[in-house]
Image 1 (cartoon, rainbow, N blue to C red):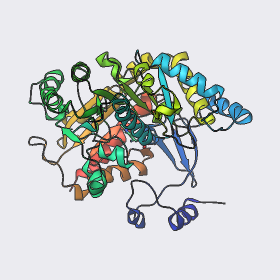
Image 2: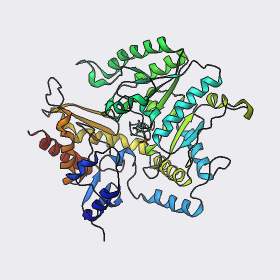
Image 3: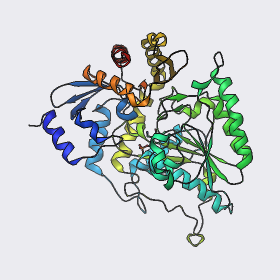
Image 4: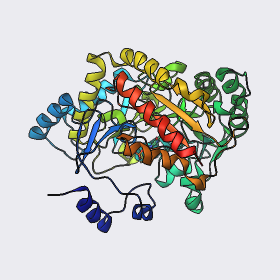
Length: 450
Ligand code: PMP
């Protein structure tokens, strides 16, 4: 019989975990999870943890969700996977149809990959290749926003801007044009989100004006820069950017890997700017947090630029072995079904209100510079000095103290640096939101006390 201790010892002797300094586990135990049920995870010693960050933002409707489980069991008995070149299958076709239906107007083509970073690679390559197929071979660059994050593979890392992940690998990465962003944390006091985001757009407009000849696409995370400490901006920026991309003949890539599927209050964040990007990258919540799958949605116009006789050598030859995996597609179909049958977007509005209410007390905390929220994402920024917003030195790892405290109280909150955030599955109840907030409050008290 495994226990926490026996399994962690074994784990640490053979495994290497993501986004982790493994030496930390000499002092902080790794937690072996035995099972998940709804919003709760349970370890091998019987301790329970409320999954307040949806297991890295993927889980939407709880662990072991009965509807997704049933769909997967059926799929498992029918077809687990098949090569996706020269072959297709029912779940992949139905899912693509569904995605075309629910994503913004004009996104009529679906290309599958198997994780978020790969979807970003696909969008970057497709954009570049589109211009090349049109004879515009001078278009080889990408514009990205300061503080953005698009994944860890080399292309995705290159268009990201979080130095913690990027700096070490800089010599390996393609050059990109990085534009100061619309992150409203930096707005003047009294300035609205929309005024600030509009003001900051002039810098993007300048970059587009200057570089449009050589730029393939602008890539953004619409509304919330999640891995960039949950920094947020106003939908007006999306509107302005769409218009400018059209004006300067540059593609717009919307990376909705983290913000898609209801996180920002609408099914897709782009809806709040009433825009359609040229590429939309989806993953994470796409399968309800069950299986790795991603999709790049794009337009007929882009698809047509690749559609020609084989000899023209204009095909998009990118591939991954698990493209269009049948189990993952079926989990995604079951997930979208839940959205539609249970009117989740409408229900989430009152859940988001409850989350705001649960977090009201944090606004006045002496070590909180900002509580910000977009839909089902709420972030609390811890600082050393509320008035000057001086951050805590990163070496002090205050956020980590909150994390460890919260775990001891049965809540999984995994801060980004010193930003504590709530990003729960949509099955969270009001009581559970109050519990998350109470434990976060105590955790912050614990973390700032000396
Ligand atoms: N883009 C965004 C906006 C993300 O938040 C992430 C993952 N955190 C990725 C891309 C990369 O996805 P994956 O981890 O599945 O490669």
